[in-house]
Image (cartoon, rainbow, N blue to C red):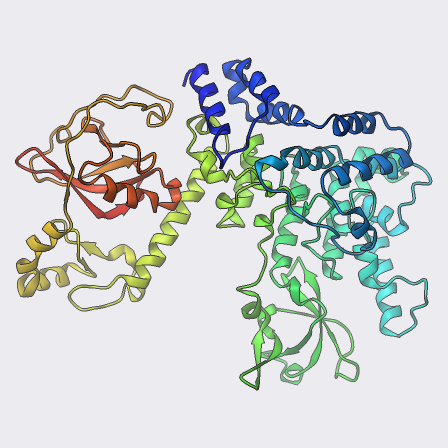
Length: 600
């Protein structure tokens, strides 16, 4: 794609109500970019961000923050910037152990406010100022920052022991207060603080006497999770450990920590709830009651603290399958496994957006971290469809021609295909059955099912069933079913009015309304149909592109194909594949019900 076309695409998209709007300074910058700069998504994103602030007062505060020397100065400047970004700082002050104000900033008109939060996150706020002598950080926070697992666990054990014996004094923090206390103006709980500083060990070494080789941030993180630290806690910008640990600056350590948090989040909503044990080989433990504790990352088990007077009083590490809660249903009490209880309500940390509507995949896609993209895709089936604050999802980005040059494109494409195959299998398992013996696809491997190649309307679980049903019934219905599924396309156009979005960055479209090379009349083949909406012409072509033409709006078949294309989630409603043929009169016949996703 030429430089001029890329500029046209970016500026054209900026005028769409579903896309991030660009101000005049940003548009002027885009027009002055070289072709290589337009393809460098990280460079482009950073430059556009710096040009997005339209409020002079906000710009002045940001400049002052970069030059601030003392902690007191940074605290006051960040407070003012947060207010500018629509943050309720009073609510945050009244919630020292919680997430505070997590109001979202969605819509193109709030882009300046969103940019304030972006820059605070990117700069780390005033973390370093709080690490200087007499900073005010708690001793527990310092142990987390230094990666001192032994000291962290000792503090947690002591607090837990004091709490269990009822010896807590007025100044003694509870276990929850200890692990959830927000530090710095960024309001970082120890879990996020540990992850964030694990990426800056040299900085930690600068302000402490601890050697880098002795820092065990992964061990600290693992310990915090075990004692019940909230794995889905957020900072002042709405960022979770997934944003901090699985973003563009991820490391092997932070990815390991993020993996722990993702798994712990699945049942963390029940932390502290009353639970009961069942299904254990030690039958004397079955029926024991207690409180659900944290997550043991090494074994993927959960802690349970038995109630006083139980046959054991020490903590137990148990498989979630053996931990149940008691609920009342239809006035009857019943037990349900915590995994089953949380299956519909559990949060997938990968898909949790921050206050500007972004998940870590948005940042990863723009920074071309294909290794991190692989990690995120492994832990989420829906991360491609979460739209950021400006309305753009990763799947929508993927269909832009320029995005195909991004390093993460192949990773995301494979993930999208797996999603499509899984959804196709689910649909087939739900509705598919053998036309002859009525065996359900869910009882037979879907891959062994075969389709009548003529009518494309019936399925069989085996060759024997297909032959038997042909003799008994299908030979009388096949021609009729084929006819019922056909749509004859209307008068084609051999010239596109605006075909730049069809080209996918390569080649020139050559139009030819005829069967593919080597195909006979009534011989079926696969076509790809690309659509830009009901009011635009569609493009039809086969794999060899020896068959290639356009169908204008209003022509027979246009509406049917656009409707089917629009329903294809994997391609965000822009394209789909269909079975087709040319009859003896030279007319193209398409079978809309065969709409699917394929690999050419």
